[in-house]
Image 1 (tube, rainbow, N blue to C red):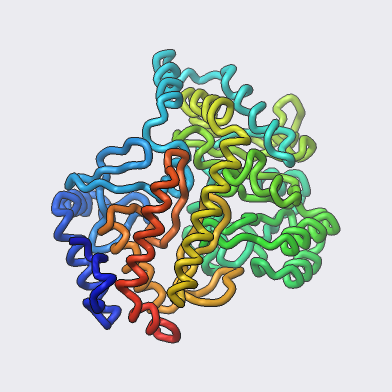
Image 2 (cartoon, helix red, strand yellow):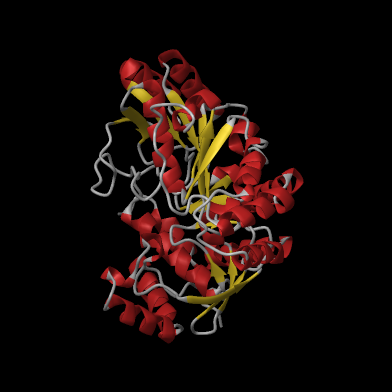
Length: 448
């Protein structure tokens, strides 16, 4: 029996800590091979892990196979994959057109140390989709894309400082849950507050001609799937125009929300855009682009331009897969259908929370959504209480127990193979969670 099959019975635990301990114990008991894999990994990797977002205790589940939107772990457990590789797995695990494109590219030889036709083809597809991008260059990840976009802004403006939002995330070395972080690249920074139009206008104008760029996601991804308001984006656009700073939209995640990303959907067009995640069909990929006059700082035909290195920037498998992914599969109609499916799912989930009177809600746009264990409007990053953190972990383990795979932080990112029946399954699991854990949800408010 599932640990959530308790809707008609009194909850097994009235205490959040004991409920979480029980959920962890059940999790570990069902995954002995994952435990053994983790134990071996700890001997040769710190923490037994090489990607922090995939680490959690007592040990992370080790997946061995994927097909469509299904995953199987080392112990043979099957899951509905609603994590979608943190938005990079848009096409699922076995899209044959992408697999065929990659195989054909590899058959032609790898590591050719040359340019190729596919990179210009993929660049043309991207330029044709995003209103802000007149020219584009490729990198290996969204992190690199943001770093190179900031370099372009500094080179173009002759200025040095970058403004970011508190609680923002722009890659592994650009993470701003706090203003000081040892992993961040040492660049001059200014900070402002997400979704506060007056504050961001004031802060940009105060920096004046010292500010090279403002880097912002039009919806926070890792920060909780919190959409920017139109007023906030408009304030960014107006203030950066006034000071001459380059406005950069990090659409590494949010570009999936329409053929031309959230910039097209909101009508607020930045000077530059960074991309990544899904665009090469699951292969390593990043891109940055914008106005031609800004991108000209990398034009090798001109003297004194900036270098842009990267052995794998135009690797044959990413270029080939990207041309198929963006040229044949993820067209405007497909993007709109995915957006609508996610909107409908989030509406249904929030309706379930409201019916139950639970201090629980889902934020997001389109196919990206995150669960929060608090009532009221959530329009900016916040410091979760210890009780909220424990509830989020309990939710994660309870969803795994029903065979649904999410991010540890409660984020879901729908892939194209996810069908209406899969969304209905997630809705039912959330309703079961609310019923089974109702006393814990009711008692969480104000606890720490």
